Amino acid sequence: MEVIQSIKKEKTGYLLVTKSGIKIPLSEDSLVKHRLLKGSEVSEELLNQVKEEASFDIGYQKALNYLSYQLRSEKEIKDYLKKQEINPPQIKQIIDKLKDLSLLDDKVFAESYVRTAIRTTDKGPQGVKEFLMKKGVPSDFIDEALILFDDTHQLELGQKLGEKMARKYQKSSQKERINKIRQQLFIKGFKSDVISSVIDGLAFDDDEDEYDLLVKQGDKLWRRHERVETRKKHQKIKQSLYQKGFSIDDINRYIEEKEMELE
Image 1 (cartoon, rainbow, N blue to C red):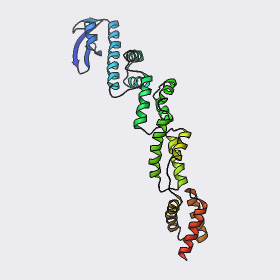
Image 2 (cartoon, one colour; image 1 turned 135 degrees about the horizontal axis):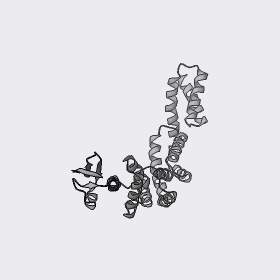
Image 3 (tube, helix red, strand yellow; image 1 turned 30 degrees about the vertical axis):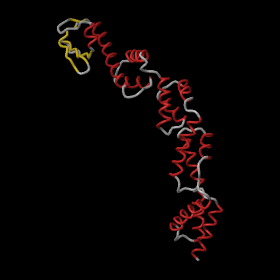
Image 4 (cartoon, one colour; image 1 turned 180 degrees about the vertical axis):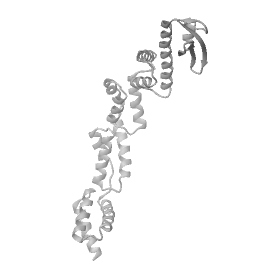
């Protein structure tokens, strides 16, 4: 038997201390339920029961607090409670209670995230799927939720991103810009047919604008290699401009015009 030496009120509940030095944080419900009073004797069995109840109460309050900031997946709650050193049996009880109260539902979590992702992120459907998989959401819930991310939403978001990227890479050749836009949209999780539609809908510079851009890039390279022997210089400039996506005809035109200009 153990004797209760003190019961102190704390911010999150009470702290029970026995004469042998055992300390058990507990809720007011446990205190009243078991009629725990200073100086009373308690069995080891009752103390173990109180410990389990305390673990549940503390874990449940922590879970509620964690949920108060935003929706969470079941895996997130489990991982969080493990870090808080809540015992596995109590974690299961807490998860079950949260589900019963409709405070934890992976299907709702997935649907909510997809809606939010469409409005506020630049992720395509594959990017959204990967995020939900990391959160431990079952694949059938993910597939159902992704129905919300239809082709219309994908195309609208893809067009916004495509236009933004086209401006970002405006100093690159048209070919290089297209490759970069395609690559970035793929990384963000957009489907290939949507990516193609986005690129088809973008307005790129006409041939003269493209050539003006080549001249600017070419002049930089010319200055960089001005001390290099002519044939080698031409070779280096051609190679660099070709790698940047400019056409070989435009590159040759530039080299010829540059040589005539310097004569």
